[in-house]
Length: 382
Length: 169
Image (cartoon, rainbow over all chains, first blue to last red; front, side):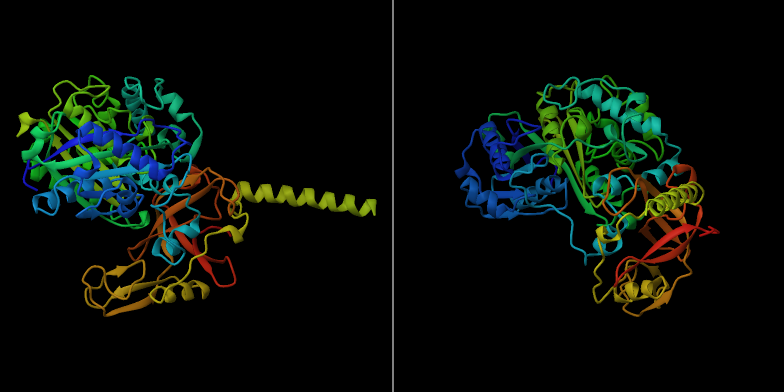
């Protein structure tokens, strides 16, 4: 993608977040899409491209009354929406479509009309070589590399707990966050054990919600009411569907490739970044994200977060909505990370970072299985 | 009749004492109900592996072109794409690479249990449970030596588990 050639001109979440038993999963997509359309000041008839995960673009387009020229059903887990943004940019630049709607909706807690992202059967490779050993999904797979990471880097369980403490400080500034009460390292470490060494607050929330984005060519931004959010860089990659086969338990290959491509495309230095979102399904994700993206050297992310550098007032604000640990997490959280980056660049976030001109939004899919990075910027950064 | 049932109760008590002792010193059987395990279903590409576990062998594959040893099974080398590969029996020796201890209830397991990734002596890593040792961090040290042990979990399937090397059981 040519830097600055594409812009996000519509962004919205579902009206409610948290527990939404009154809406099916498909309606969560629609609620977010309708809010997003209003945000962009357009109608469904203006949309000619649809991308989504969790539901098929066929279901979403038909339900919304859109007849698209282009669809993308990339479904690699919670970072699918980062990949949709990247693919939409390529499609628009190639003239395949003009106005792309990207939707997410997930009845993660209430389970109303839920379909989509699920594990495979007993004859798949994960079904044969991982499932028989009693995995319970993300809580037992995503967490598995961390003891090795601790041993190799010297990172401590106190530093892991500090990720929760730090992000709860941000959540306290956000009226829409699910958990807003401040917490402490002791509280986090003494909470209920879920999968040693991870306690409950170190695992993401399980909520309902959705979000949507509208993406167009940057030369059209004057037609839309919101201050434009430009795409500066994009990247994506995948590694393995089996956590046991992740090449290095202290680093994600997909994180490295996705973020390196995004930084190269954006042509920026890390020191120029004002704001970072790192998909935090579990509390160790920000360590991997900060290190694999190059913000910290190997083993330095734990102390960096524990010292408050990513907290409110710190030099590198990270997960300013409270993250998947405190804001919300419907299952495929990447959309909410993108929404927060858009709000920060627009300048209307609940916990607004001062002079936020460049935001790096980094997503994970599956259990370190996939990754997508989107770097956004204000008009000033072009 | 009363005497007989008392005798049974007495025996049951002793059995319980022995079980607790075994659990304390050797680590209890982590399995509660094998029928609740998610059973693997072999494909043509993985058949040799699951036949091997039934016969008490841990079978890996090796590329005859670039010498890479790899897992999970496939009929070509993931490093160089050569289809000139062979199946061989691994030593069964491994070290503990990483793990978690799951505290949420699972119908197949009795109490908190480890889910681990072990590094085989031949190089590849695989997921397993560490058995015949207490399921506690003090007993599960990264890089500790392990040995494979096979257990029949259904008529058709034997799973490869690992236990501390030199374990009494």
